[in-house]
Length: 254
Ligand code: SAH
Image (cartoon, rainbow, N blue to C red; front, side, top):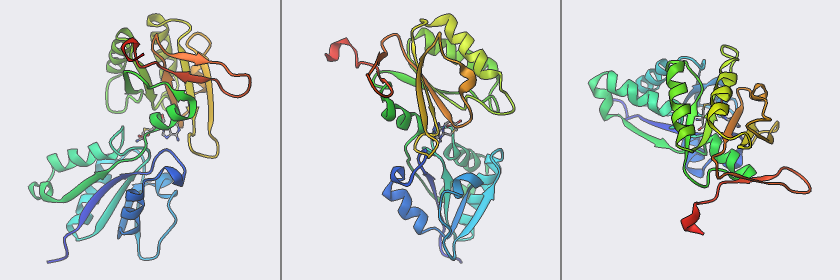
């Protein structure tokens, strides 16, 4: 029998080594095998003796099963995601593969090691827009019908949540972000603050603040996280630089 393998599902944060947790760094350093989407593996310096298994972005279940099979061979496998692995990323794919896969997979030594999600990093850069109740919605309709995205956007707007929008754009569906903004404009105030946070933590980081009325959703690309405020969210203009954006913690807290 070979040594027992293990699987660690880690998040690299949105960009920059300073936002990778020490736990994740240690797990990566001790891995025999790294599995992940090529651009994420590209963020990690190569290490002699460590095998890399690069995959495309659209084969999540295959990648999860590949990682589980490596563990069966006794490997110490680290599966990498950007941000947090549990937020629109690989952790859920692994548990789905375990649930649907061979019965023995349920006893594999598997654990998730968290990372900073894009919404947390974006919020930190601009102030505290997620300071009160918020939700996160992915605009990708790869795994769900667009009608469900619309239903959730409308519910979030009607309940006055702050909304973090992931996956606002891709080459396959450039119109979706415009549809989403049209829907939100019908349900929320024109002066609602909107934050576009592009490439947070990376060299190309660019953050700008608009209102729902003024925002051009076409400026969002695949590396952009959008935060749409609630009716309470405030913009605090400053003489220089980007304004602060925050959502107060509710009247009872004052
Ligand atoms: N697991 C990741 C999310 C993966 S979905 C996390 O927790 O952050 C991919 C989407 O995340 C992108 O389309 C974008 O909306 C957002 N995103 C990831 N990295 C980002 C970054 N550095 N800056 C802004 N948005 C980012």
